[in-house]
Length: 366
Ligand code: GDP
Image 1 (tube, rainbow, N blue to C red):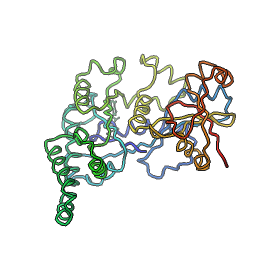
Image 2: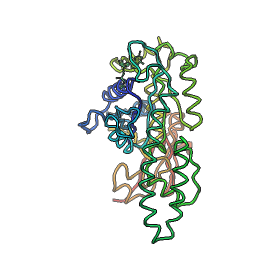
Image 3: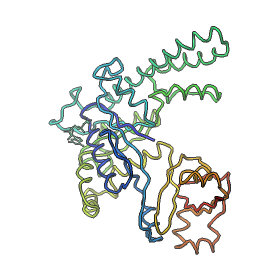
Image 4: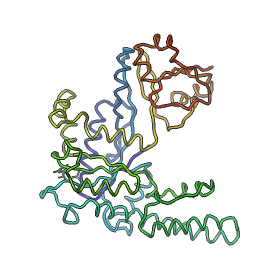
């Protein structure tokens, strides 16, 4: 699961990407070797793991990770091939969700490609490129389906969907605001187009340090971004990429002091990573023991056997049941033994839908 960081040049994408990967790289002991410098593996902050690790005296604590891709170079005209535009658009097509960085900070030393700070205009510029690119995809599909529809009458339905969807985009709308019917064929077709403007988006409003304490409330640019995002059901996170980059260099205790000075509980980066994880529709279940306490990533809605399969395919194949306790329950009881006495450790079967923060022991046949 990957998120793409997009935005116009000079809005702070690389700064954000660097702080993300730096902050993530420290704690990650993952066997990924990042060959592509534009891809970064980032650990998902989760204080439950620390607490659980302490309770079990685990030798190792392994957090969940997500990948971020720095997609630089999107400019006006990208969909027409300007500045390698099509290549960047193709990169966006491969990600599952988008972090769209918008510049809300004033700094005369940093040139804006369009001469002034105006995030609403910037968002429109980028979104229009995404829309143009999607229209092109639809047009290609229309040409293909129209030809086949002459032989196969059942394809008339798809052709109609394509036309309506295209009209929606041509009015300047994102695919995600298109009202899809509940028809299963239509849902399947729609998915198969893999439209850029259908991907979930978080707007990262890059502000100056002064705007952090009130979460950007006094910054009119942030207000504009919030209004715009609300219309398309996207979330907005206020962040100062420059501060994050500075913080990524610090040790944990120094970082805590730094945050306190800024009047913040946690860094914007941590909030953004967690929100990104959620945006991808991901949750974590946890396993804990002396050797390791670990977060395992699953799609929200995954059932117990498939969750077990994340650990080992044998666990899924031989699945008998799952012993489950909710993180909050375990912490409230203080130990697994106490949680069992209180009847808070449940035995769940094949149909159980795993929840975020479930601590699980799987029973299986080998
Ligand atoms: P990108 O082109 O979107 O990747 O932008 P960069 O991350 O390279 O940033 C462009 C310039 O803006 C650099 O000189 C950064 O130091 C500066 N910059 C990035 N974030 C901030 C910020 O939050 N405040 C200020 N004042 N400058 C920033």
